[in-house]
Image (cartoon, rainbow, N blue to C red):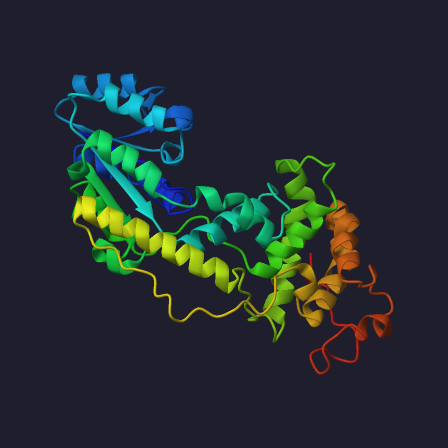
Length: 363
């Protein structure tokens, strides 16, 4: 048996992959070999890796007493011809497709968060939405897999706990693999790739928008961006306004996505007999503002400015301190906090002390 976990992206794939790798020995004890596939084939040298579906099928045929599990979310959005090629390669081999989806508003928000967080995009949310909207529907990909593999061999669920066995992703996936005990015990708390606070995202977006000529590679992130993200997290945690929430979608966007999602899960239900909870469309509210760095509470930005200009931070993270002014300029805050009187005029009254706060621990 071959199990193909195909994603989709931003629907717990990294969580599952981290879990599969961490518990590979326990899976092996249940007769399941966790392997790498496609562009991920060399990610873990201690695991079998397959460049193609033909190689995967050959391995499965050579080990009829075992199942093999591969997980690669690139199998979800790739061209239909690729899916058809995999289906042809696996002909005659027992195979099952495992796929997870989530309400589309959540899915787009998660993609936006990842692209901003990783420095891939500096678009505001509305422009990002227009860029991605034509690729939101899960139905074209699932239809290709279902028609090719047979709908009876499709395990499709939503991240909605009501759709998942045991109410969580890992337990549900293990059930689809035929594993109902042993490795399931640690399934409750694991979560990978959690999204950062919206204020951190908008900080990063403002930095990227003004540094488009710079390669946002790992070294740049470590020396320039991550230290500032940590400062913003500290400023948020210290503020009475730190719990301020933001809504990225407009009412029109939410209605469009909700209607599309409900149509798609209805089509999935007709093919599989699985009922996925629909999105209610009668309680949609308008977005109060488009999130941006200018919408971050002023006391949080002032605290961030104080921390970024602290001597200890400048000494430890000179590169990060050197670009902090980009974010501060975006909200017309002075780049230095040497004059607390100048900073105070940007603050929400009553949220900060008369004297400049201590920032000795900012580094």
